[in-house]
Length: 96
Image 1 (tube, rainbow, N blue to C red):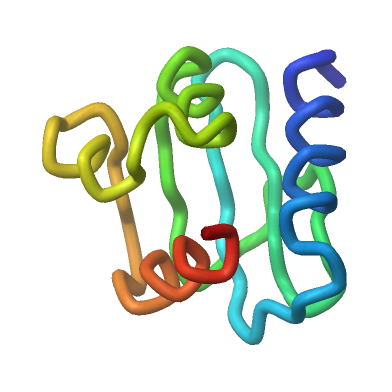
Image 2 (cartoon, rainbow, N blue to C red; image 1 turned 30 degrees about the horizontal axis):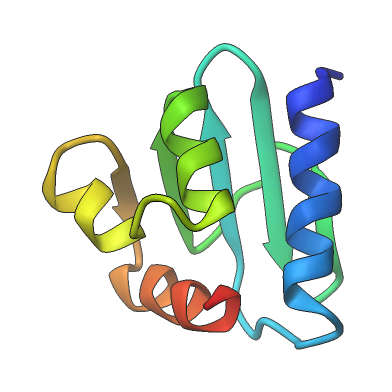
């Protein structure tokens, strides 16, 4: 598993800080792997989820660090969303 995925799992776990996410979402990071967020927490996995968000490494890191708003990334074509848009929006509000 890549260092980027491991670092992202740790960062997302910290951002959630015990808040439950009552859906399932996957971040697919091009060339690196995938991260699943669901009621069980955050883990490196490629499970089926309600929504899949796909981005390159640079975009994902910018979103995670707060430098790039996920909505702006989506509107600018840097973040692709496949599945339940409501779940994606809910995750965005949980991660703040």
